[in-house]
Image (cartoon, rainbow, N blue to C red; front, side, top):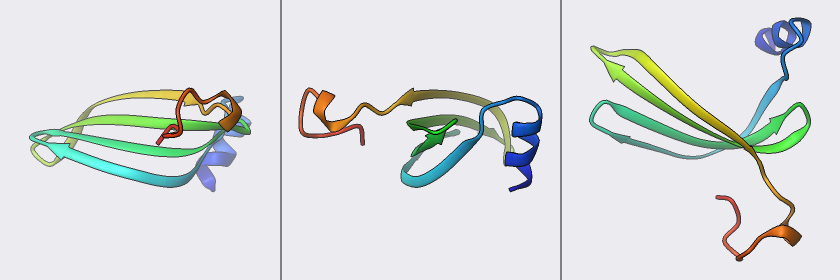
Amino acid sequence: MKAQVEAASAGRPVIEYERLHRVLAEGSFVLSVCEGFLAGVHSSFYDLFRIEHGKLVEHWDTIEAVPAPSQWRNENGKF
């Protein structure tokens, strides 16, 4: 909750994680695939971390709005 208050007061959009779909790890890389809401928009969150000596040393992410089911091109959905 503290992070949400700080983000909102700093004018940054608030991220609300709703569901963790999967975590994949290989070697020094870990990928998490989540869904939730960014500033009220249903979104997917992909975060890739590189770990070195037990510490997080790099992080990449991508955030994308999840389209409504009527806009899907297949029945698989986003996740």
